Length: 242
Image (cartoon, rainbow, N blue to C red; front, side, top):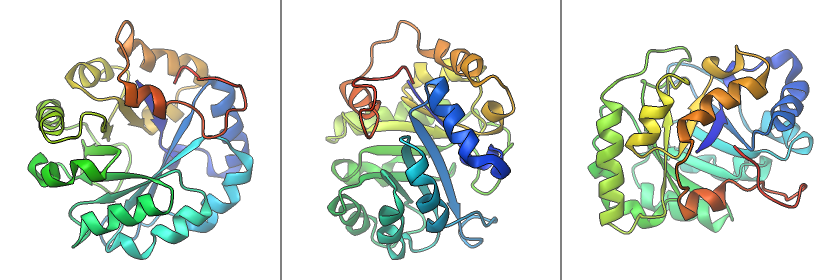
C-alpha cells in the first residue's frame, strides 16, 4: 500500500520543514489538490507552488487537477514538477486525448471519478491510465466524512479494470481516509490511500505511518504498485516502505 498525504492539511507556514519531515519518516508520495473554484468549490494553488517545492523534495508529486478543462494546465504543472497528473472524467470533454497528452509529457496519467460517477466511465480508458482515483467524498474541502459506498465501488472498479486491459492500473481512494477504514479499503482492492487531516494532525509522522501501513500487513504487492512505490530519484538506492 502507498500512502499519499494530502498537502492541503500540512502547515503552509513551514512547507519546507513539512516536506523534510515526510521524507525523514519514510513517505514517498505527496498528494497535491489543485482546485479552481469552479469544478470544486474551493481555490487552492497553482504551478508556482509546485515549482518552489520541487527543488526541496524528492517526493513523488501526485497532482490531482480538480479543475474545469484540465488540458489547459497539464503542460504548466508538468513543467513545475508533477510526476503524475490526474484529471476528472466529469471535467474534460475529451479525457482520452488529455490522458494521452499527459503521457506524451513523460508523466504518469490518472483519471478521477466523483462519488456519483459510475466506474463504467473508465471502461474504454483503462489502457490510457496508470491510476484510477475514486473520490470517497465530494471534491472541495478536507475533513469530510467518508462515504461507505466506496468499498463496493472499489471492488467494481478492480473487476472492471482487470477485465478491460487495466490489470496494472492502481486504484487510489481520496477523502475521509483514516487508519480505521484503511484495512477495509485495502481489502476491497485499493493500493494508494490519500489522507489529509487524519494524517497531518497526528505527529510524530513515523507513528502515524505505522498506523496506516498496518492495513496492508501480510498483503502481497501488485507489480505496478511495487514499481510506483520507488522514489522518483533513487537517493537511497532502493525502495521505501510507504
